[in-house]
Picture 1 (cartoon, rainbow, N blue to C red):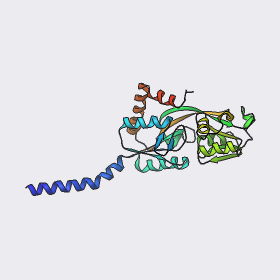
Picture 2: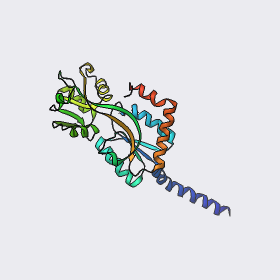
Picture 3: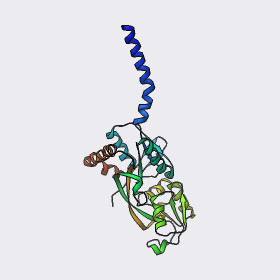
Picture 4: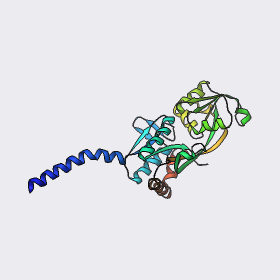
Length: 251
């Protein structure tokens, strides 16, 4: 009888050893973002940011295993949608909510609102549409800003793989203006040790709502877990505290 029990225990251990990676894989939540300071910052071991810090604290409340992935923005969006169809367990941020994206995602919770504005370093007027409509504009590829430029009939558009590239192009005079969220442009200029006093804030195309989102197939119970985590942090005052750390005052 004792031998039978021992063999059963051994069998159970081996079964768990082989099955546990599968279980872990099924429970793993993919948290997908891109390097877009100060929203999400990927600097070696440091993964921080105005929205990243909030999502990290939400994740602790949700209490599930997860992995944060920094991907190029175009791929990040595609990856969430494709993974959701097969696994139903991924979120993405900071995703601007636009009419074009509306039907592709579950809009879990709005984190911040930020103006999508044109920035310049040249001594040129950029306060009205007439000022800027014919200028050479740089913008992050596959971004909500790019959608806004096309909708507004801008024609001389240059896309950048990341916001750092856009900032460098603007500073070097390769583009006339850079379309970026109001919190992003000065932060990137400062971090790159460029002359932030030269950076001018101009014409606003839209005040954009940035979300934590999942794909359309995400189940209601998972959406609710994330939403409740956000509501708890907001009630505790943590959302405001985190955003203030990044000089966000709200719009």
